Image (tube, rainbow, N blue to C red; front, side, top):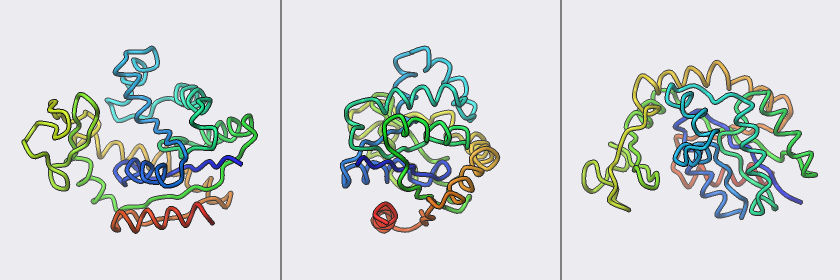
Amino acid sequence: MATYIVLLGPPGVGKGTQAEILAEQTGLAHVSTGELFRENIKNKTELGVLAESFIHKGELVPDNLTIAMVKERLSCPDCGEGAILDGFPRTPVQAEAANAMLADLGAQLNAVPYIIVPEEVIIRRLSGRWTCREHGHIFHTLFNPPVKEGICDHDGSELYQRDDDKLETVKHRIQVYIDRTSPLVEYYRTNGLLTEIRGDQEIEQVTQELLDAIKS
């Protein structure tokens, strides 16, 4: 039977990194709404143009756009054995839509690990983040600086700071998360699917606790 996991946590807790590691170790597809949005924005699709206006202001993309995009992604062959959902759902409305999508696939949600990190740590992580223009490689002023300032180590393209990684936007993103996404935590807690994971530990320890949560 296919396995579907929702990985929860505010921006900057390391969901993307952990989702990639979990995908490699479990064989499940990594479905990242952030990556899907960036791909659509880069290709200037209709969805990308609409999504970009919200993302650059630090706002959540409206439910109907996000739901349609994820539904299409889950129909891809690599999701046949299941998927790790990273960045979706973000609201109870999206959670109900996710349940409906999985029901259509003859599946259900198996676990919801929730990565938690103090707010001041999130701000420090995100406001120092830089992204390469060509392939989206991530660097950080403090934790993962490039060898040459402003240049990607991997492909030599320019590094830039996304609008949603600038300090004021980061603070706004956290507030948006608290206002709109925190109810989702209670939604899954009530349904008995939520497991809290401390994200301010070593990456390997976080990964192990996530794997334990999935297995249980």
